[in-house]
Image (cartoon, rainbow, N blue to C red; front, side, top):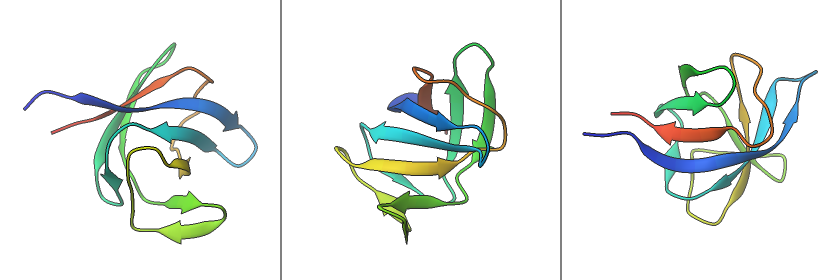
Length: 82
């Protein structure tokens, strides 16, 4: 199965390591993702928040906060990996 784009970073809070993402597909805690931009890395989703409330998943059209393991930048794309 190929990776598919599930979002784009619209803001990154470097002090807390959280990216704000416009979700283009369904994501859930436990999914493996790849962040593609100036630096590329992969990780498992450990936390999703919508309006400061923890969620287990987010659907297309949501704007969510994701805790990232490494720094990212506005405009970096997020891919769900198989």
